[in-house]
Image (cartoon, rainbow, N blue to C red; front, side):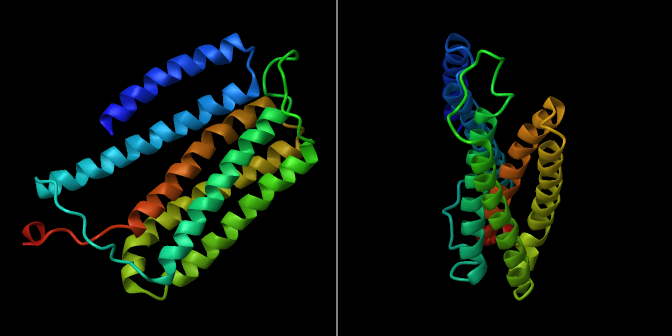
Length: 210
């Protein structure tokens, strides 16, 4: 994962140059953004793996997830997918809107009302599955102990992101709110990755528990 981060940063240098050379083409902008999210996800996983290694002082074989075959496991996977779809369609909204570049920059050929509705649909699907996951989590002590804190963080960040999204839409897409919305989308993604990671945790080796 450390090598992936190094390679990814080098790739970002090349993609960043393409962004400039193509005159802020939205496709290169989207690639730049999504690779950034991929790198932050990798960094998150590296930190989590390092924290486990610090506890065990060894690379222990991964056991079965504690929530394996429980309904919450499947719901969390769906939550990860709908959040990812919301982030990706959000890049299409930005690439089609007034802040995709300067006045001469190319825009994506999507009708704004249509692509905004598609993006909003995935956001609302995410909210629905978040509510479902919270309700299912309450039925299992194990799920509560693993997912309560990650789901609370995700719900808080998602609520903030939704408020910013609707504010920017009704206020005529001011650039300051767009910048906050783009930045917070990264926090939303990392929070749902944290929920997914927590749902896949296995018991620590006996050597640690002893």
